[in-house]
Amino acid sequence: MLFSNPFGDFPVIGKNTYIHPSAQIIGKVEIGENCFIGFGAVVFKAVLNEWTFVGQRAIVQEVEIEKEKFIPEGFVVAKDSTLKKLTESQREFINKVHQMNRVLAEKYLRTK
Image (cartoon, rainbow, N blue to C red; front, side, top):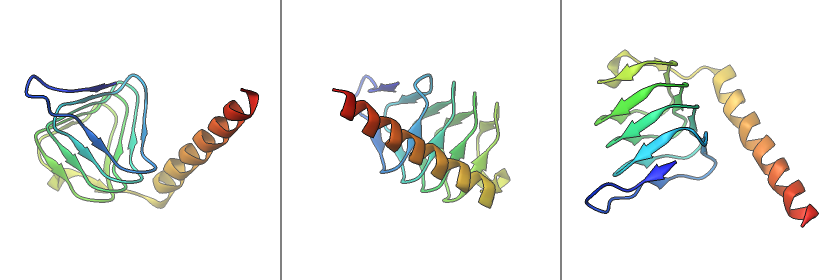
């Protein structure tokens, strides 16, 4: 879910980014292109540059994440210096999620 904050700040989401419906993206957040936000994740006052993978139930708050970083499930991010670089298999997973979403959208539009 995307939420504004009391100051009226809204998240900005880049192209080809998947956000699970149970994830919470709150307030002034920038998410770059080709990112993946897993279920139950919370992103608050943060900048996630392109190709960032946020695992399920991870929390990212008040930090900027460099591009191509992997945030493991359940991890709480304070500084991105401890984050691993995104692997090729993780990048492929993000691409497969994007492809599946496009296929589902096309099939949905055809049935209307």
